Length: 507
Image (cartoon, rainbow, N blue to C red; front, side, top):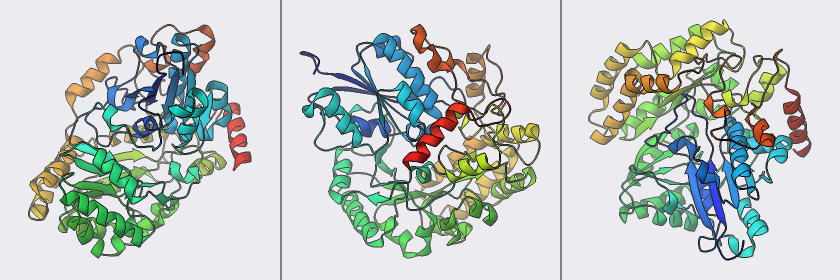
């Protein structure tokens, strides 16, 4: 236990912001929760734990934060793998004896590269962190029950985050969970109740499950009864959850969740094209016509949010623009909560398909798997596809259509949705229509001296985070080189090929 003092553990949710925003997104919903759950693996009486989210607070570049640390735990999405390497260089410079632990999809898909950089590579679930705590600090360092450390969270806002299940029972071709090859399962009701009772009072709950509905109606109904009971006790103000398309097959489900305090649902629409949904292997979205599912939810008094995803390697620009025109003109459904390009994440069927078809662009970088950078060869020209990608995040060129859409949507649902629900959906629409000029100017000012973003991985600049924020030991400077998908000729990078082969042998 390192003498008389408690071991010091820093847990970081590593992140590269696709807009190069250096200040984080404290007001964004949802926030990442991986670091909060990982903190729950440690005995709070025996271990001094600090958490930090680069998504919420911006890049961790404070030199003092890396001093006198006994363990650094890193998690994050696939694209954040290089950022984890940066943070490792910082802590190994400032705390030479620090143990570095990494987990998440990138670590699982890059086993050789991870083993070369980190001390512990966790390819299992969050509970594996308890085993690492015992191995490094002794038996008493691990918690008896792994509950998220909500007491360490520093963000405000109206939302608490609770998880009732793990993984997903569907296998969409683009989803990192499909690459995980893990089985969907729900948590015990007692564990769900413990999370809710441990959350801050007088807030809304966002259930961060990948599929709150699940694959067992009996389990769903039991979970719903618990949530209804706790809501009626006044433990929270209402809730939102993510459900898959099959949820809408039974019309009674909307009534059941509304009676249990549900205010809104999120469902991954992804595309209005049946052909594209089949390419994505998103069969659950073919069970009920998607527009009917959206309209029925709104009429039932439940706000509906969704995302749209476009794949220039399998869709023409004409088809993608036509879909955007339809969405912005159809006033019986809300505008999407987010728009992105399809990401061929490591380990997913989409990744292996793109690799087999030689779709990846030359000099493709892992850090560019952010949903706004073109990673694969488009059906149309690269330059034209890059313009589409640049405009996608803010629906540039649709401003007047969005204003008229807001008016029509309000008139359609002003009686079925509450003022708060309506305000939330319309605010999202206006966010797409009126991008913050101040925000853009600030980014331009702070990125002065950096090459302009091209939205094409081949030429997209790495950004300032690839330059050490403070002096690091020479032997760790290699941690600031990018992880490549392809070389300059478009061939699979040799190091990545080595990782893929190692992953294949363990499957």
